[in-house]
Length: 287
Image (cartoon, rainbow, N blue to C red):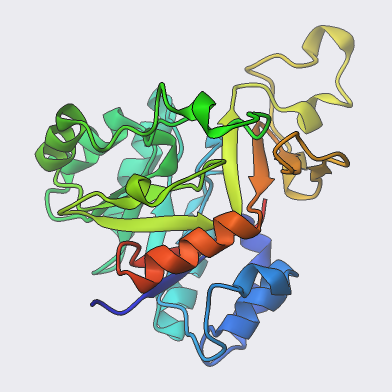
C-alpha cells in the first residue's frame, strides 16, 4: 500500500510567511494554520505533509501573480514539499497566465485543473507536466439540503463511466480529487487504475460568476454582476451558516463559492478509505 500523501491548500499569498519558519510541515502545524484541531481526526499525530497547494480552484481573480508564485516555490522547496498549482475554470486571459506559470514550475510540481480546456492546453504545451483533475470536474450531487441518499442515485458520480475514463487517459491524468457528498458510500471511491485524493474537512457545493462579498459596497447597478474589478475582499471575509440543513450539515460561503463541513459519518468514511488504500492523498483546506 502506498504511503499516504498529505497536502495543505493555501489561497492567500499573505499567509505563506506563517509557514516559512517551520523545519517541516507536520499535522499540528496544519491544524494551527487552519485554526481547526478537529480537521486532523483522519491523521496520526506524527504525520508530515508532502504537498503544498497554492492558488484558488474557484476564482480567476485569485490566480497568483509571478512574485507570489515564486514565494510559494521557494517555500515548498524549503519545506521539502511538492508544489501543486491550483487553477480554476479559465477565461482566455487566464489561459495565458497559467501557461506562463506552468513554465516556471520546478521539477515534480503538479497542476490542479478544473477546466477540461485547460487540461488539454497544458497537456499539449507541457506533455511531461503532471496534471490532477480537480473536484469541479467530478460531477456529483453535493447539495447539503438533500434529505436522503435516494436523491443522489440519479447522478452518483462521473468517473465510473467509460467516457470519463477515456478522457482522463487521453489527457494523461493519473490522479483525481473528490469531495465527500452527503450519504456517500465506499463505491464512490472504487475507481481502479487511478490515484484518488479527498479534500477535507470541507466539501464545495457550487460556484458561480457572482461574488456576494465583493458586491456589498457596490452601487446598485454594479451589485451581483460579473465583470467588475476585484479587490479580493473574499480573502478576509467568510459567511458562516448558523442553521444546519435537514441532513445536519452547516454551509459556509467565501466569494463566489459555497461549502459545507464534513459530519462525523463523512470523516469516518474518509478514514476507512485511507485504511483500505483507496484514497492516497488528503488535502486540507479552510473554506
